[in-house]
Amino acid sequence: MLMTSSIAPPTAKPPEAISQDLLRRFDVPGPRYTSYPTADRFVEAFSDQDYIQALEQRRNAGAGNALPLSLYVHIPFCESLCYYCACNKVITKHHSKGAEYLNYLAKEIDLHTVHVGRGHVVSQLHLGGGSPTFLSDGELSELMAMLRRNFTLAPGGEYSIEIDPRTVTEHRLGVLAELGFNRLSFGIQDFDPAVQKAVHRIQPADQVFNLVAVANAKGFESINADLIYGLPKQTSESFARTLEQIVRLRPDRIALYGYAHLPERFKPQRRIAVEDLPHPSVKLGLLSQALAAFQGAGYVYVGMDHFALPGDALAVAKRQGRLHRNFQGYSTQPDCDLIALGVSSIGRVGATYSQNAKTLEDYYDLLDQGRLPVVRGLALSRDDLVRRAVIMAIMCQGEIDFESINLAFLIDFKTYFKAEIESLSEFIGMGLLDINDNGIKVTPNGWYLIRAIAMVFDRYVQADSKRARFSRII
Image 1 (tube, rainbow, N blue to C red):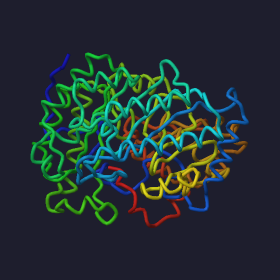
Image 2: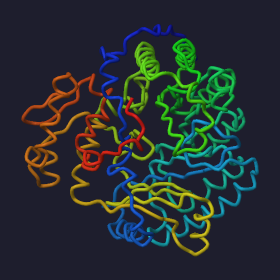
Image 3: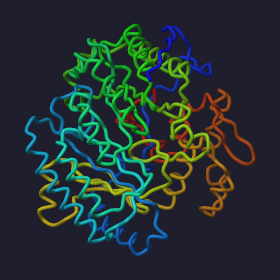
Image 4: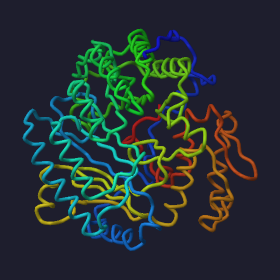
């Protein structure tokens, strides 16, 4: 049942008294830490042979000793171009491309099973894009059958798919439920017609409300809504209306992303007029509005861009200290190896990261040669592993226990990270974290600036003066 709620006015302060001055101070580029080291550190010297070695090490470790397994499948196709989009996608109305793509996914899966074996238990599956719902019902059924032939989808696992509301009907939602998906993520971005026109993504609010109501009735366990602030034509007044509609929609989770305007990197963004973008001070105000609105509506701030209702599994995992983070964002699943399938997809196996070819031509060509389509990646050093554990503890639990890190990596935390601990003094002075002899703990205010805190421990970022390639923290 949909619930109504009033929205805080544009002048409302964010929760926990986070001031715009503080937000402005940390409005700098920085990683999102879906991995550490981040993908910009991957190298072409890491080849398909390095990836194969990681797969075979996993198989040789045996099911009882290997990490749990997660799957990601990238479906790159979209029928129309959204101007803000920075994802790897292929714009086409030729749906025959979907069938061809599935044939190559089958080849990639077969090559994986040669090296890692069949039947591995999977507790998490995510279909992203692009628009996974570009595929027909039959093609989605074929894909899921293909995955089930090669992997064992565990009962009670998290099986999610990204939804473009313009490509989904009530009937299709029923098909997705029958295929085993139990989580949906709706790409909404903004409900305002002027904003939708400016970013070339027209989808009436009534359409989204109807689909979410049907999804709730069909028993999907969690429904997420994606929003973006900082889009062209957004104003405090228009965004307040969108926030009011989102609160009435009452999704289980909300992902709120700041728009990063990088037209030199992403061609579609060149169609956005710079003069239509909200002024940086207005953009900060939009974030303030959203934080106040979601807290006022009872959502728990999970971390970074994510909010969840108190009963949602993500909010429960945060309360219980069980949050994890992977290339799809926050997760309730334990630390996992991730096999990533499809063009441009990024995976993690053991102490390695790998990324597939970024174009369909290269992806298809490598598979036609009988090769896994990995074109770059990284084998993590011991220092990378230590820092990854620290950064993920900050991002997911909001605290670091010195003794746990000491025992896991046989170091003395205070000595190893002496310079970093000294650098954290400014955060202490601003009330963003506390440090004692046993560890570091992020305050409620600090959670809103968690990326800035994590960056202190990022050896690559601290040595890099060219951070502009990252999105801004705020």
